Image 1 (spheres, one colour):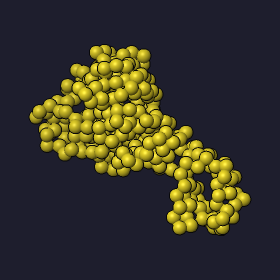
Image 2 (cartoon, one colour):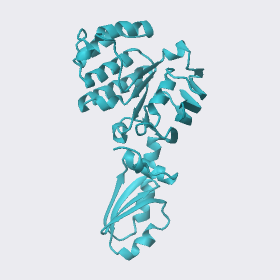
Image 3 (cartoon, helix red, strand yellow):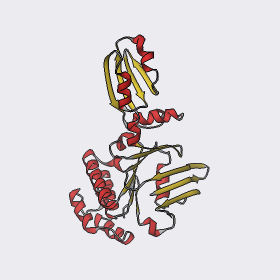
Image 4 (cartoon, one colour):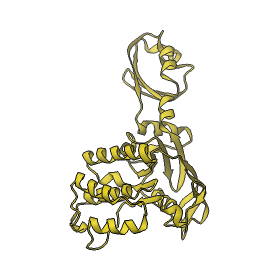
Length: 301
């Protein structure tokens, strides 16, 4: 488990990360969301031990990370713009990472290069941006590090490659306990892969929630009432987070289970009624409005 307590990092007068406390459980995909400049990359660099925090603590399995080579062998960080040796090839990167990560799996690396159609002897400078992202992910996976930190990694992958990488993540989580931590400024990038999502804004943590529990207790209803005079009475007793009206169509965001919502509206006269799951974006809009923020002002789609 990665445990972060009261973490702060400043660069001169700029506070990049401000009093962040966070737990990342093992064997889950943790999504770190926020706009550019929210503090995601700085936080990941501190988790990986590249940067030292000003205040607060970061522990992995109860051990501090910074200046601790034994712990850092279990962490692999993939930056937004991965670094490779000048004039280096994929084979050169394999040779390097074998010296840094004792458990690096060279045979698997060679096999995955073939699966992803990446030429092992070709200079990486001639790879496309997407191919460089793929290579960085393969290096991270084959390092056999338990924690793989991916900074905007999925943004450079096409849909087919994204699905391939997700499948490998799922396999490694099952077989060797991999814990991927994926940052993005795009909620939709993370919606179909993450178990837990944390929302950063201006260096602070606004929200950290398990997606399954959030989705279970928050639903959207679209409906048309037979008589508009019944609307106020029909909505009484509900924990209504949002109510949008377009013509006669009412779109409601309600905090309740599907069973509770269906039972509430069962006796109402409705022309149209539909119960829908919320997208990750809609969930975060609703949850952040409750704590006094409007996510639509600072989260990109």
